[in-house]
Length: 68
View 1 (cartoon, rainbow, N blue to C red):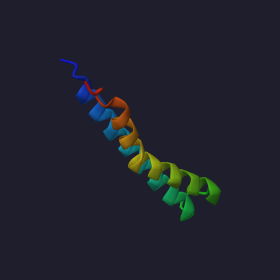
View 2 (cartoon, rainbow, N blue to C red; view 1 turned 120 degrees about the horizontal axis):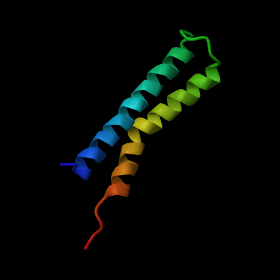
View 3 (tube, rainbow, N blue to C red; view 1 turned 30 degrees about the vertical axis):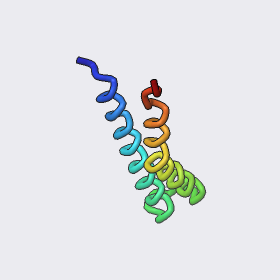
């Protein structure tokens, strides 16, 4: 009962959740709630945005069934 489509769907959801976590962490750094360099906050923010918006599309394209 291990459906590859279900596993891939959960992987894409996990990537989106990780992106949201990175975005929130980046915002906390930029707003100086966490005492880390601002550059790190912007890097985390950018990585989170890429992870949330771009990576699920990349994974879906990579996992697309071949045309017959």
